[in-house]
Length: 264
Image (tube, rainbow, N blue to C red; front, side, top):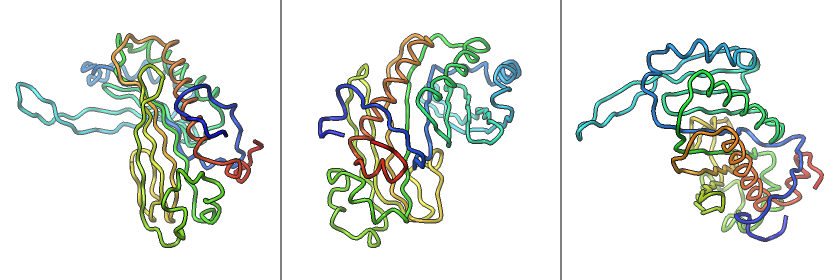
């Protein structure tokens, strides 16, 4: 990957990684809250429309605060989770969001094809007039066995001051940067660095593990209220995923790609 800015311009062609350290890919669409969803009347037809792909359903109760006339009132809401048979794909539906995520990502096309089916089911069975936010997130995790190779797998700009420090002496070090990107006034949040065993920067998306790890967590999003349109959402998801991949390819070297089974 060239040294040009990963925040503008086109995205490089995807290089499939046979042993990719990609532990989670997520997209989430937020919309104005639909309070009537708490009656749960909607859930049966929605479940039926996606049950072939996501036959396992579980529910969670989320606690939050509702502000009325300056007074905060505790409110609970249900989040419905739908899993595939292996429980590596999960669709989530709440009062104000729809999300799709996987722990076994194969390609951008496969992910967007699955998102299309989910959006069509949502639009048919529930629907919303507006969207408030669209986000896409990719999380890579390098484990201890490959720490010795990090200086050759990650560009010096990303390792920063840690490039000259032995990895075994680093317990915790996370860098976070927020960038403006060209995709409809979007933003890109990137976090990278070392975590100790059983630590995480986001328990909802990054599971703690029993060994130290190095994370590259890239989240691109557009936060503006606009009409709900499936074709537009899919195109924006594609563009955000491409921007994330541009940043990923800027952050890592060809050695990273080769070590995880790629052919740059």
